[in-house]
Length: 445
Image (tube, rainbow, N blue to C red; front, side):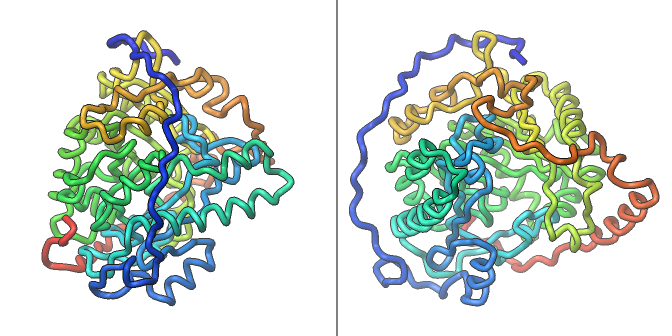
């Protein structure tokens, strides 16, 4: 779908590779030089064993990395994640990581199943950011080499996967609360690794001090105090004030900004007008709408597959929301991830959406104070556009077809009596508020 409005002419952007940056040897995690002692490791040995039994790679005392299934998928030529469709990342060159596994929320839909600890302030030892990066890359490359042994891995993708170009700082936890996050980001950018950082908006002071990232996300799970309490289950007493302040900060940021909506049918899809009002205050460059993914934590949260909207339902909600936000348009979709992208119309240049990222230009100029969101855009290909026949799946990939197609509407999943019974159980589960863990403000923000 072509965007209907025009904006200023597209800027000519050279796609060139900058020089390889040689860095000093990083301290080794575990040694005193690589860690500032405060209060011990965040990740206990028991938790570490549990995490690693599920495929996590714990890094130092508070960081972790884990192979994303889309990294494996694109390595085998079977398609990339929604970020490939929306923004042009190569999923097989992306490392999923967090410098802080702890979180200040206990989201009802958490697809990490609350395996991580909770914390409202930093009371732990602080690992050296260079050591975190080097150890994370080492462990990630170790997993990649294992994946390259598969006969399904494509030869040219193997070589590409051996060089990380993107880091999704969204694995779990709250990355902005890591006290040395600025140094971590600089270390990634010097290596020409782009950064996609996601925050729950509970550490506004840390968010305000955060240096530029390639793309900054705030999760938007509720439109008012009660809905955010029910869905996100934040642990701060002043969670709504923190969240509101974070959205205000987002509106002032110069890099690309995103409000991410995890949609739960029957819970946070009922008031699109309220969501539109909230988004207007945050004024993000993009709005990601994604249907919730089934997770074992659903059992404790009172959720079930009926609360997972189908792709048609996500599209319908996105179209309704776009109608309430005239400054945004329906830019892209990824059926496989059950996601839709709304974009500010200023990213529609000459009738063409430019939601993709010129990663080489960002890598060349990440430390230039004058760099803004419009300075490193790239054209969105036709196959990724909203309404395309491919529904966001790249024609260069070979899609594995499901034996049984997904339901088109949620009513096809369950009979009416089961829906009513599940709704009653959900009301009971969601009605149990989370107890705050701390009476005072967190030192991280």
